[in-house]
Amino acid sequence: MDAVLAGGAVSVAATGRYAASLATLPVVARHHPGACILWLDAHGDLNTPETSGSGYLGGMTLSGPAGLWKTGLGAGLCTGQIVLAGSRDLDPAERDLTLRHAIPVIPPGAGMAAALRSVIAGRPVYVHLDCDALRPGIVPTEYAVEGGLSLDDLNACARVIAEHRLLGLEIAEFEAAWKEGGRPVSPGPLLEALAPLFRA
Image (cartoon, rainbow, N blue to C red; front, side, top):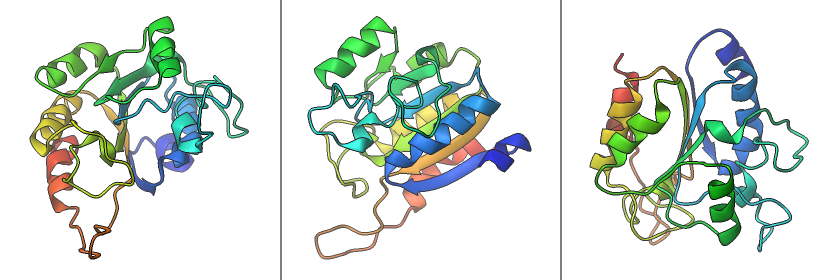
């Protein structure tokens, strides 16, 4: 990824578990210190080892690169770069942090795309998409949170993002099959919803 961003190319990755962002986001911060980090996720992932009730590393994935705890993998993001979108399951400590640091939290629903345009504010964008940002049942995910984006909603967001310079896209938590019966899942509909990002 370091070489990709250093060469000016767009980084695209399917990361499996979103804890991989502990390593990817410091690289983005190093190459693009003014970037908007668009975190499309049902969760905030802004807990720290001190505030997490579960100790689950995935719930601390964004806070580490933002320098709120030492991961050993680097930091470099500032909270002013972060935009949470599709978020609907934030812990009390995460809500408090978003208020203290004025981190925008854009819930799913009407007006989401317009709100994104406002908070991105012309900056280049690095997108993290956790598939649990979508409504349960669209794709299989480890965690399901009621509400969320339809594929049409995601497409509308992608069209807004495409108005800006795209630095990279990482897709996390896309399961290859439904647990019930092991029925395979095609990534086609998800990729079609994201297609505006690559129609430059």
